[in-house]
Length: 149
Image (cartoon, rainbow, N blue to C red; front, side):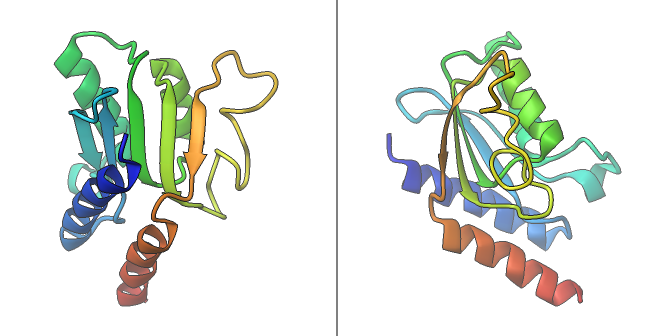
């Protein structure tokens, strides 16, 4: 699977949400052929919903499309390391693989602050691949927050 190309698609989603004033994070849920089953971007500001992170939106979209909450054979590609809430949703949906771009040193729950998905006590442990187009993903966030300060 071409993770760089998929991450470019997630970056495009993130850029679109930045224009709308939300933190630029984009996420895709794809099958083994790389076909997009679900997608999402941060909608917290737009929807006034603290749970509307890109990963949650993409999971909801994919689950609705396939008609099942279990996303066993699917991969999530997201521009930013998931937080605790999103890592929990990834585990609950049984996504088999997580691919993310930049690390989140403040809230990251897949290696930075915590490592919920690979914790020895975790019941479900998806494969994790980090750092895909890391610099591009980090630059999106840096540019966004520079304009906010």
